[in-house]
Length: 134
Image (cartoon, rainbow, N blue to C red; front, top):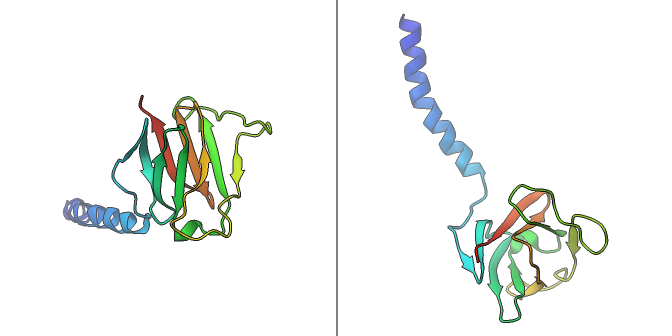
């Protein structure tokens, strides 16, 4: 009986502690932001410092320090979690190289799409996930 109480007390104490430690290991994500008709479902500022949507319906990025000189992969889909749309090259991913060698704070790597969801990946991490809301 004593071991059950000890187990209960330990689980009540250590479970929240493990959640706090796990959260500290996860890169920071910003609160939900809106860019034109898109809403950020997730955004890691160390990789993508800002996003803008212009009058020509282009989505522009400012990459953060963790994305400098890294491969930026863009994937598009019509529904969240569904299969990716194919690009003109027949692949489900587009590797953007326009940002390589540019300074931080420069608007670059714009795309224009009718997709409902846009994912930006760096080093296998989803660093920006946009959802069309209108």
